[in-house]
Image (tube, rainbow, N blue to C red):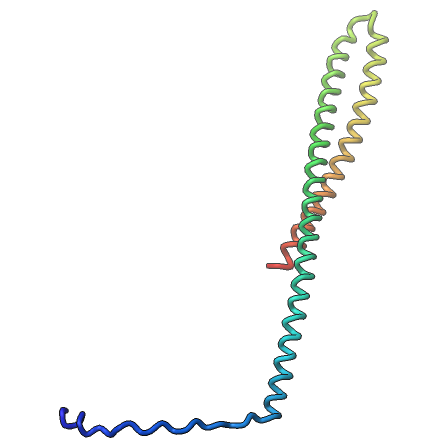
Length: 150
């Protein structure tokens, strides 16, 4: 092996670099493709901004819907409390009807409370319908916002 190391040839002199003139057709074609790519990139960036704006808008709608839903739930709880209070008063007044002297006054008050109870029942039913409507809108907003990005 020692003999082989000594016999290895000297490195060949470096060849002069070969200069190739660019083909004008290929250069033009590459410039056109590059221009198309840049145009596509700009289009995609613009579309991305539009989508970001739409997402922000959807998030705002969602927040408004959530706030409104919370408000409607609070109104519904308040209506339920008033309804329960009216029922309790009616029960108390019906127990007091045994008193003959106050019977006429109490009957009038019971009728008034029954009317109030009916109005509260109607209001409670309307609040339930509004709550269901907003929950449906909220579900649609959620599914719409999440559906486009899954």
